[in-house]
Image (cartoon, rainbow, N blue to C red; front, side, top):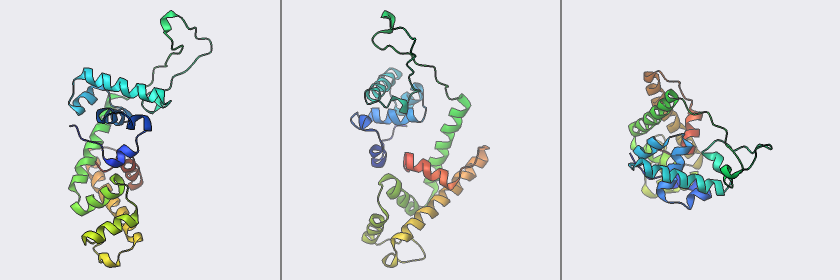
Length: 210
């Protein structure tokens, strides 16, 4: 299902991708996740021909900025490779990269489904706090000011008027641990490898709160 990127996810995009349209930006994120053109077409609800065009646009923009390796295996320039008419003006060839196994692709897709489901099971206030930190990229003092303005406690053990920035960090870490526990329970049901809170935090840093 197509969904727009969060503001924080857009901020983390390479400059070359920020200059492209919303669809191209979504394609870049999916390519970074090793999704193929069929998956991209289904996810963005577009014809596969359009998905191919968008992929080409993204690859072209990255190539011009020297960042094609973000979504594609590196290009090698062998010294003894002749440049002929059949080579066009490129003068290089690309070694075939190792494709992700279908089983790994399915497992990765399933993991993100589990992550999204787990986030939806969290309390609204817990999701809000994680969203402010990972999606809005607000600093602890900004989050504290936000909660004071709306008059909602961050911690059930301390009223908001007595809350300090260190309490914000503590609450964020606690919510990550909560989310990690939910995710691990689903992973166990699926017979999948568990993930640590640190690993989960790294994923949220990359993707934002889904």
